[in-house]
Image (cartoon, rainbow, N blue to C red):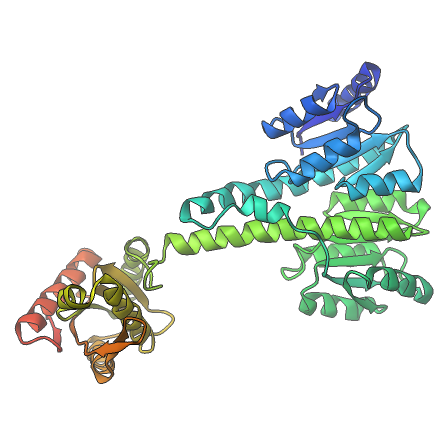
Length: 457
């Protein structure tokens, strides 16, 4: 996978060296010689990943990384710190600033390329979520990017798959200060636990006795229930080739033994923040999709949803020679309620009306607000007799109990008139069926209201 890599270093020879290496691997590059220029490039969306030097005059790499990760516009960008600093405290400081990895100069080319490819792949998945989530702001959901970037990565559920008892106890104790940790030594049982446990992060030892830990990682990546859960490999120094393979097929991160406690906490926290970032964006996408097809007042489907799905149901019923029915419901004298008690009362009546309709419809039925006080119900596999029976139950349910209004300070009687029609073999489109249902509703209104009428073809 190709990508545009931002190289940030105040020394020109270092920039050219990385540019040459990355170009040979078919990556595009862009360079910045200081922190502010790097931030500007990132905010303009001109890169997919940042290779960031630490030791720079003015604004050092730690400050740049912290700024990028705290800015909702750039928080999704992967940052790899590339530096001559090789002390554990330096690595920890970079990870605490939000860096996704920390490579020490001279950089091993294999480690660099596999890390860049892995992080770019993860960013590509996030980018699609981001673009869709941004649309949710048009529905008044708020800013999902700001909400996602504010995640602290704590109080998570972590699964540790490790059969070395001492190592498992040490890591579980360290992680247990901020997270709920489950330890599982049996790889087969671990698969079941991972699938059912709803974990925020899974750590896998590559050296499980009698089992290939890398294969376990692959299986976790392939399951629907665990596909989006961050995976961290626990590896030995001689496992470099297996680490590269794991990163290539989607493992998110790795820790080298002996595991440094602080690095363990920092890497787990980073992965949990990334997962929750994606979860927030995914939730915003789902919410916006729901709002796009839902009537905000009643919670029923809206006219757009009805128009998009009715044609498919109609054609399917026609091709299979199955019945299809349509009900059009209209609250009797609804204008009088609005005029007498106000529009707030009218809204309360509409919400209660929708709730009572739901009690007598199936999950396969389409129930949509058609406009004003009208509701359309589409009943797949329902003939005229069944449709009339359903309509009558709804009519009786509406009439049976008065509707509370004005925050339950009083109640008013409400009735509904319903027109029923079924698909006819001569219908050219769903509009023909709906037109007959509308004519039946007209008859119900003129026959005294609070009744069900059916319109024959």
